[in-house]
Image (cartoon, rainbow, N blue to C red; front, side):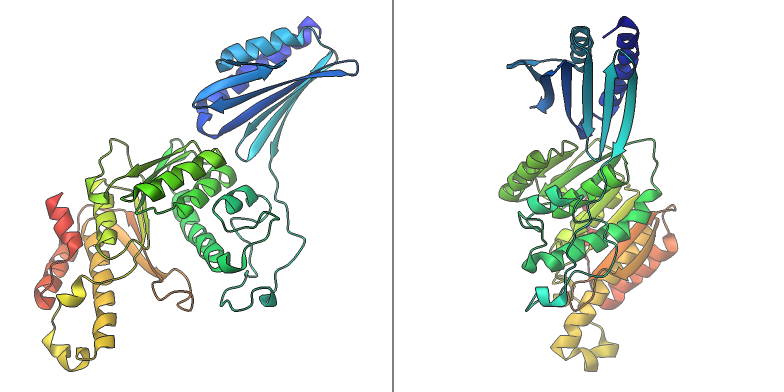
Length: 393
């Protein structure tokens, strides 16, 4: 290649070098093909154990991005043309260069629509089917993710027994999408998943906000079980999601210097939900999202004589305990300066534990809400775990 176009190539590579530094956590690989006549020579650069490694002519070496691009421009002098593909999650940048021209093109990875529409009869015995809606986590584009979290078969179909989970996580993304759009765009969003389990929700949100919304984000998963944390680490490694970290730790024992923007908790059992809410409040998180699971704590505590004749029935007493628990959680969030809304996350036909608490930090502490909360504690003779955790921390 001539010197003039080599100089143009260098300018494009400087831009890629800056992009690499800014978006390292979503970088996938660089493929370069040199051509002379009918002969081609290929080089591949990938991240391995946080090191960039470049293989060319059967030799692999550790290399910095600057050294890599210097090597590519020097090699380009020996050939008639080159084609370079720079791949990130959700986007590729291609550079072509020869003696006539140097050009660059950005390409979004497009959706691949499924040719087969799922019908109700395809899922016998299930209450769930694929819905007639525009999914946020699309079959085709998100196949690698859906297969890794065991929702999709190897041949690209949603598993019969995973349709319900697929619908749930997609609706969760829908509910969070607009809320997270309000977060600042000039910094990395730190998202803390409390009681993450196998972290399916974090993986799905990571995919959506990184590859669809093009937002910089970092995920932290917490769970006391080392085995599920190890499983989450393995999935992240398989997917190449380097903007994630996982810790086998009790929620109440977690400490961080990071500015946490979002705290999420999906079906954390009983008072584990309270730990997650308390941690979110303690960290002054911008957003707290919780879908509570079982409610046992207040059931054995609360008493309310005006409703004694009604609450003598165990079913009513249990259901009222659920309402009281989540109602007081929501009120205490308000007292701590959050704008709170409570919605049905999914249909109660899917699961009775379908309440989502959404809290957005808007104000200073609300003393009136705190007084109401204290009155409820007195009137119902309860001492909720959330209040206890906040006092302890």
